[in-house]
Length: 311
Image (cartoon, rainbow, N blue to C red; front, side, top):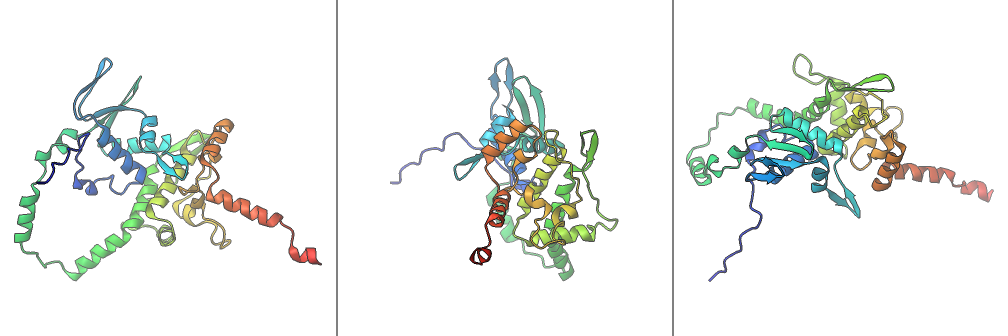
């Protein structure tokens, strides 16, 4: 007689496969993770919090709590998303009408919209019924070769459009630094719906390299944070093609502009205006791959030439 398995503690939440068709599906990792964290931590029943009631589908939280809840380890270092990334994620989720937010003295009340609908198992199709119907219905063979080729072409271009669209998330955003207005250099599709050749080429070359789509998108986010954030001194405005490729024509070994903004290389403290805050951030983060390579290069140049010593 088999033993009865213990029930799983702390309950469960439902995540619909329909999420693959949503605006969040192909956003950078921090946006997808924060969205999942919000669903996971939203109240499943009404709860009293002081004089207020936090309803089902709501949570009272803060940027610090979100960052702490999604931390990860790299060796001995504890890594977290930045406050700016949390703000950016909530802004995009609000724009996609997936959440609503309300600031209070105790934190932010976040409402996951349509929570009741998506967390009710009765609103989902029965798997058994769906599978039976699927096996009984014959597959159609009306799809032509042209349609298949079109589908392949769309899949092939999908990463290009993802990078292009991610860059243009910051369209219209600007700030003022040192009396100078800094505006994000966005791009639009051409009248025929295609990407400009120089931008398409730059994205293709970058995707063919060793960096993943997610890494490129995070690099764009880091650049946007340094450029548009009021706590940062960075003022270099680049077009997307410049961001990805400048430097390669002048010297084969010259790093691309986006290299310094990649997840493993970006050191937030190097771009902060406040000296004390900059020092703390650098100490917490440690040297980046980019800085280590620079230090090694300087060390090599400072060593005396052996041939001159023997002479």
